[in-house]
Image (cartoon, rainbow, N blue to C red; front, side, top):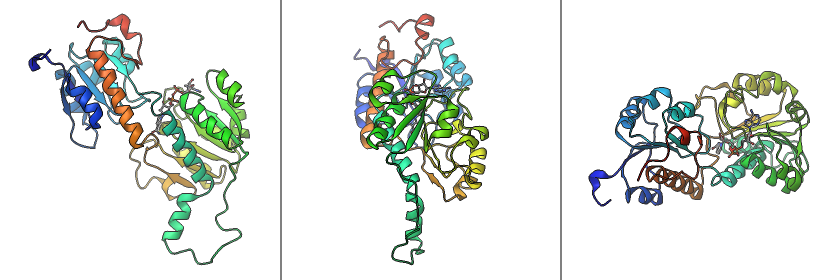
Length: 338
Ligand code: NAD
């Protein structure tokens, strides 16, 4: 297919690392959105009418309206993330559009970050940093200064024992922690190899010193951490969220932290992103905040982009892509003919 006029077209909603660009450019006519900000919906709609495939980020809302606008020559949406709650997968399946994600390659990086956030929250690292910089450090050492929570040997409760939850559990085992987990499925390997104990959500919340969330955002997990559930937790507990913001009811979390039902929270994800600087949670010293960066390492972001490029290549070259999210689509529209 040397003739450029027959090349399929791909629109990517960000500039991608060079290795991913090379995979795409040798095969397709690719256009990259040149900005760091998300692509506005009207442009997204325009693009899906023109191109054969879309490579997007979790910041693009690929909803029913966008999907309905796609032409019949539009074949796939390749998301550069493992979570894909921003895409209306059902609408895509109905239209025979393949949807892919980037699992596995970000698991260890995200688990590293979740555990970092857990430790930072337990030991008040962000607060201590602000304290030193602000010039308030005026005694050489204080016996009761910046007291935190021990992590070694404590109990961690993992909500969602999938890939990342299990990787967090491995780190917790290294910290001699008792591991409880709640999921819709039992994870035999985690029970066998890590000694993780399956419990119901109520038991997990009541018994854990650290609660770390690793479920996808779905209708069932939206506001899973509600006021009622926060009230079950220990007064000394830390809540760590590196999944998706709306899994936690932020208003309820604010009350919980302000009124001391729980001790602290470490949040990488927010109900709205970027979160408003006036978000009441940011006024609390016992919140450790991060701007949705759990998978952000040089190596991992490159691997994610390469994987997304490979998924798109497979779709447009008539293969079943390795990370197909909606397998049912194969019944609606078999792979493109080469
Ligand atoms: P996974 O599919 O391997 O694991 C998710 C687990 O949650 C599964 O075991 C599943 O059974 C369980 N689950 C689903 N619905 C549930 C429910 N209603 N109640 C209890 N358990 C439920 O996914 P993963 O690769 O471990 O990723 C998990 C999530 O982490 C992603 O969906 C994504 O939203 C989030 N994530 C965030 C970042 C970040 O930058 N902060 C990075 C990577 C992933």
